[in-house]
Image 1 (spheres, rainbow, N blue to C red):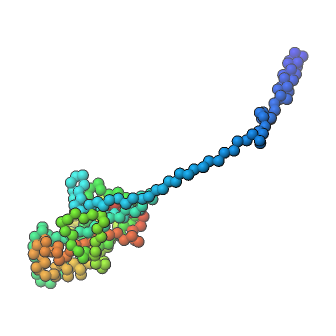
Image 2 (tube, rainbow, N blue to C red; image 1 turned 30 degrees about the vertical axis):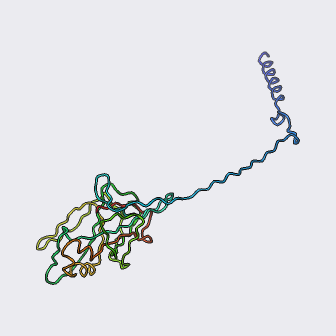
Image 3 (cartoon, rainbow, N blue to C red; image 1 turned 90 degrees about the vertical axis):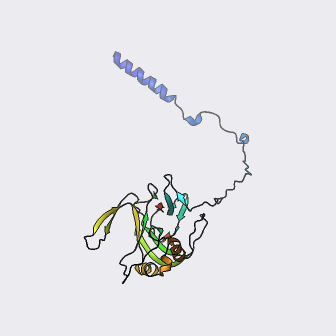
Length: 248
């Protein structure tokens, strides 16, 4: 009987506690609509932003931190910074900057390749998914030993001399088959580079079969040949692209 009385007492206390609970909505006083304070915020300040064009910069005779002569070549699309583009106008010299003696007899050209060497540690961009399409044209004006700015627009012959579709491989050596007359060809491993096939007829007619007076020295050849112009094909370069720096 003692335990039964205790249980009944506990039950009665619980009922009293539950009956004392009320909804939280009944707590506090109701708001009198006549006493509500209304306010209006007026802002007369206008903010105007403009994009300012950077000053022109010299883009010729560039060197990297190691003192290596370089040329920027780029087509890079950034979501926030937009498109970065850099083309290359380059001179072509005779071998060793001296007079070039043309070969005698019947001259044939089975291949002509423009070799562009990567500068060390100087590539930023996509090396996996982007396919770069690089085109080569002949300049119609000669690059001189002057300072050229990024605002310079070079004129060139629109006839395509060569093109290459490639992935950027700035850290991968290239295996090239070296042809040796009278002996077995040898496979050579060369530093990272971009190799662009050039029209063999153009190379034959404009270099090997040209007037000998145009080949008497480097300066004479530069005045005659003018140079080459490198630019990425924007419609055939897929992906985000990249920024190259080439040895010059």
